[in-house]
Length: 294
Image (cartoon, rainbow, N blue to C red):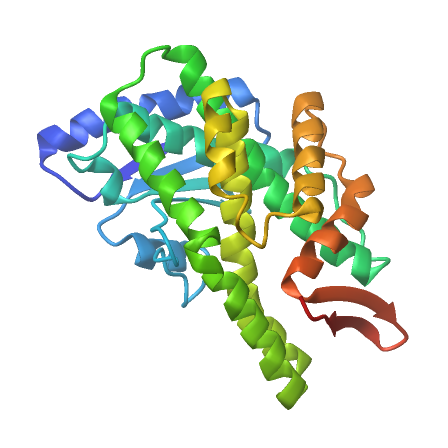
């Protein structure tokens, strides 16, 4: 494993390098079949990610937060990239450890996910989204629980960081139902232009933001008894309904059983995506998306 650190003085680089030995230790415990090729703390996070994954448009800036870590699996191994933002005064070893665990668990889950068959494009679409969201639920909840088990008394910075992120995700799905209104706007626009590709392209960022915010919130709620007090704060969101709660119930069950077979969840995912005005169908011409009113 190589470590490339592009920030800080030589003394700071050595301190970071020693801390990153934790990553090697945790990685070894996961028994991953793919080699950990390199850990990078780059000067320019976005540029490094774009280079490694051969993309041009990756941006760490999201609607309500900034991504500070990324795992990339290539033919020659696993690359872990961590932002310089993790090494500011607002962070500490625990906040970084949670992110190290988070990214390693993403890679671990990628090795456990069954190969998705493309026999039914409709089923494939729902399963793909199921695995993306369950993966986020799993890595968040598991990393929180590992930290809690290893460190019964966590630091102020760790608690503040988690609260800050949780507050941002709660705001994302509440905010006077701003995102719900935006989804309704995309549906109304579709009624005029009738272009499915244009509709999906405009809707996908909203779906990604809201759905991942929901699973992040519930992964936090479910990781400890104290988390339950946050659920009443999101019940006014129009995205939190029976369809959503059934999907979360499935994730809780799969997590408890450590089961990554989500084939039985396709109908729940179909129902959940109706919250965003989408329903997919296999047709003789391929996959079609019905645009629903919400």
